[in-house]
Length: 141
Image (cartoon, rainbow, N blue to C red):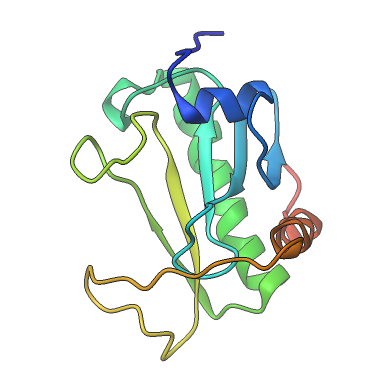
């Protein structure tokens, strides 16, 4: 599997950096964002180092989107969100140059407006609890 030794997400995928895993599959990994918009904000990445959506191999398109759908369902079922915000950046505003899909739990009146987004933090151990709740609610493949 292609890996960039300087890529933070490749290091998470390899297990070299800690993360609160939500999904761990042969082709894909999802984990909680360390600086979430809201608690339960998940990042979905291919295990293979892929820079942007344009670079995503055809064989990964369907599994990537299907996992994104499952994560969107999990934030509703596992966290009680009313819906989700699902997005990705390509180059501009892409803080880590490894393709990643944001799945953010949403509720009416949560304060997310335009592109001036609040950031939350997890208390010690709270990230693991959110990840476990999402894993438990993740629909099967």
